[in-house]
Image (tube, rainbow, N blue to C red; front, side, top):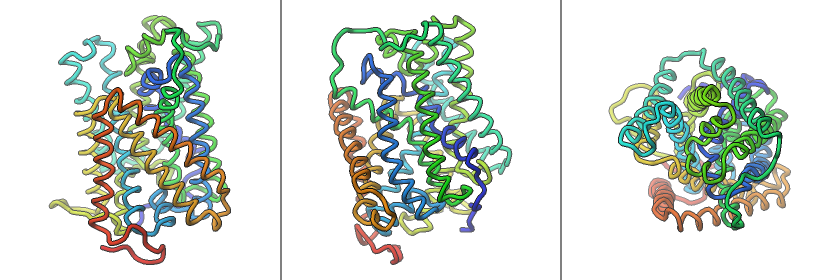
Amino acid sequence: MKSEYQANSITLIGGVSMGTGVMIGAGIFALTGQIAELAGTWFPLSFIAGGIVTGFSAYTYVKMSNAFPSAGGIAMILKKAYGPGVIAAAASLLMALSMVISESLVARTFGTYVLRPFDLGEGSVADSILVPVLAVGLIVFAYIVNISGNRSVGLFSVVMAFLKIGGIAVFGAAALAASGFTFQPVSGSAQTVPIAGFTASIALSILAFKGFTTITNSGAEIVDPHRNVGRTIIFSIAICVVVYLLVAFGVGSSLSLEEIVAARDYSLAEASKPAFGSYGFYFTIALAVVATASGVLASVFAVSRVLASVFAVSRMLAMLTDMKMIPHSHFGMSGPIQRHTLVYTVVIASFLAVFFDLSRIASLGAFFYLTMDMAVHWGVWRYRRAEIGASGVVILAALGFDAIVLVAFTAMKLQSDPAIVAYAAVTIAGVFLFERAYLSRWLAPQDEPAHS
């Protein structure tokens, strides 16, 4: 497949716009209520903890990207660590699946917020039908825009990133101003929040930051990648921490914990009512629609020439196919491999948006992403840390944080929704078994070709 990636085509500002554009959307609009349900009254601090854990994780990616700047991103990092074997292929596929999940999460959030002004009743037949219909419609729209080759998508994505960050920051600041800038924990039950619940909530907070990996997937295209990949990731995470905290404290100043949990799929819209009235409510709805719609476009488009239209997941799947790490079938379709993987991505994302609610979609994303992330840290620590000059202590700390959060999240979900734990476990095991059947070795020397 002819390369579609151009070196030095993404500026530092363009990279930060890309990273924040992917992160801000699902992270705030879809996950705030879910995080509050687990973390309790101090849920804003979960975003700080998530940012810290993500910062440790980013260290591994930055060191690898500096040493091996590549458009292959995470797939290339895993291949460099484990060779083109089962572990690298399966972990890369989990990353691709977590990206698909992010798209379905943001798309379903789009549908949820679009319907808020009509007050159809949460869980009603109309609500249950229209939310997935709108979600699938947005995913299909993103696909159509991509295949149309509309080069204006890049400028649109950058502009939308600035608009939604500014709009969300204004929402948080205004809500805090209405409360007299009292940075207090949200009001609610006096019961002490278990440490396990707060720790488990960090899994979802991390999911709100995982968009930084889009930057590593485009490392070879960033101007002066050895210097700017790390800076882009750090700036993006820092901006998101500030925005998330503003909104979290803003929501907490307007609603009680019980109200936030009750409206967990659309908590920002509910928080805008007491703070701003009907005008603020509609402003928040409009902001959510813009943020989630542009978030889908940003997350499904990897960047070429400042966010030109290339589908991020299909791009990664196409790379894995080129590396002979996953099989490929045309299913009678014409055109290049990336066009085919576009179709696969749309089908999977649409399936998730139709048959899973926001809580389950987010949970699947957390399980897949944390598993992949741990594989990255272990592989780099075991096989590459000396070569890239990385601190083994920092990498092991990142691995340990992921493990603690994953265990706590799994324990909480086993109590509240054991089915989603089973779905995740079966899928993860299935991915590894599938790759084991396709590839001959769990590990393979880096300089040897993969088995096909």
